[in-house]
Each structure stands twice: as structure tokens, then as C-alpha cells.
Length: 322
Ligand code: 13P
Ligand code: SF4
Image (tube, rainbow, N blue to C red; front, side):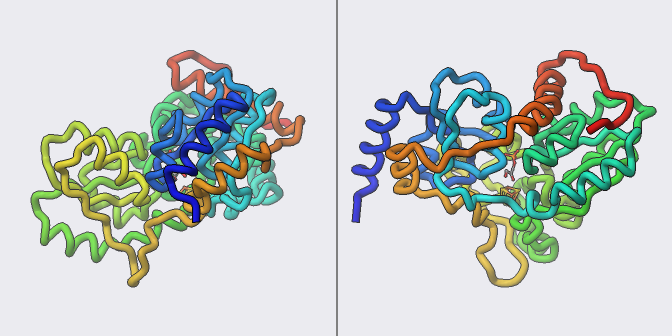
């Protein structure tokens, strides 16, 4: 059995050999977050993926995150430690069905969460992450109909916040929908001094109990900046690692899940391990590839997202053309 230190040393020398950068999402296990050159939420990882100069990028995250980097920087070799690291939102939005929805509403603008396949992005007018979603929706002219997918919980939350009417695709995150509103209510009663923070992928009845709703980086900021010392956290457990680093004295309580499962861990994010990262850097495989035509099409909504995020103005298409 290899020691964690030996694995980390080997990863470091392979990284130097191949001039590679390691990206990690906050939902990875702590040891992976610790060796990452770039650690962040989905928006940060997509932005940095387009910026870093290294020819090899290893994404310790899920496939849609690696695909976003490939779409934005097709010249890079993008590695993923485990190609099975999918996402329930991708599974809930098959390309052919999403295309029918798109074609039935040619005059609408379709906003897709980056937690989607390259094909779904290619069908979309703009993408968003939970960090920039409000800004993206607010940038859409009031007279345009909006379709939002594939996360219906994030979509409903955005519709409420912006008071925009939206048609929602019925997908969900299999991790965030497992928090229990009833148990959260009981837990809050035991800890009236705690700040409840929740990711917008959670069900509405869970969000109704939250003091702060936001993306992974927004929730991390809350724990970092809020003077209170107790937090009930309704999101994936991997973020506790960075929260605890930023506020070692804070007490973090995991929001309870339905049933008795410890299901607040994303099974896809947790497929990545240090030894799989070492193997991928050694063999430079598995590599994430995206069809050239899809790269061209999916780049348009990703570029629009980046521009709106940076405060630049953009042109909206008048109707859908494939
Ligand atoms: P953010 O990193 O955008 O908060 O997304 C959460 C998530 O579910 C990533 O898979
Ligand atoms: Fe997908 Fe949910 Fe896992 Fe994020 S946490 S990768 S949305 S299944």
C-alpha cells in the first residue's frame, strides 16, 4: 500500500515532467484539494481553465467540468482520473430530448447550467453556474421567453429571485435533493445560534429554512466572513475541508439527509483518488475529447457567460438555428 506522501511526491514530479496543472473542485476529498494548483467552484475552474498556459490539465472533478475546459481551450490535453465521474444532471438531460424542447421554443432564449453535457451546451444560448446565474438571467431582455435547464431547483430559485417567468427542465442533483427539510427544522431548533447555509440545487422546502443560499464559493465566503461560529451546511461534504481551513474554530454541522444514509457526498466527485490522479499523469490518459463541431457550438454559450460575468455586453440571437 502506497503512502499518501509517496503518492503526492510522485504526482508532483509527474506534474513537473509534463508541465501539467491540477484542477480540483471543492467537493473532492481533502488530500486531492491539497495538491491542486487551482481549487474552486465550477465558475472559477472554467475561468482558470481558459487562462492557464500549461499544455496539460488534469481535472479532479467531474466530466462536464473537464469538457468545459476542453471547449474553451481545445489545444490543451485535458485529463480526468475517472471517465465515469458523471453527474445526475447530465443523465437527466439527454441531448435528443433537450433538442426537442429547444426546437419547440425557437424564439425563446435557453439558459443551461454548466452542469450539463457538451451537447446540451451546444443547444443553449448561454450557460451559467450557480455563482453567476442571477447576473445571467438579469442580462436577458424582459420581452424574451426563458427556458432554464437542466436543474429545476436552481431554475425555480432564479425565477423567484428575478421574478422572471421560466420554463424549467425537470432535472435535479441527486446529492442536494437528499437533504431533509423536516430534520433540518429539528436541527435548527437544537442549534438556534447556527447560521443555515444551503446550495440552490436543494429542494425548495430545504431552502425555505436557509439564512444564506448560494454557490459553493458563496457558502465558503459566508463561513469565512460571518463572525458567528456555528453553521449548518446543506451542500456536499467536501467543502468542509476548505471551510475548516478558513475558520478552524468554527463548528460546522452537516445538514441531515432523508433516511439514514450519509448521502451528502457526490459519488461521482468521490470517484477520483490520488492513485488515479498519479496513473493519469503517468500515462496521460484518460483524455477528455469533444467532437469538433460540438466544440464550435458549445463555445458560443460559454463565451457569452464569460462576457456577461465580466460586465461586457453581448448580442442575443433572435431565434434558434442548428
Ligand atoms: P458550484 O461549484 O457551481 O457551486 O456547483 C456545485 C456542483 O454541484 C458542482 O457539481
Ligand atoms: Fe452533479 Fe450533484 Fe455531483 Fe454536482 S454534486 S456533480 S450537480 S451529482
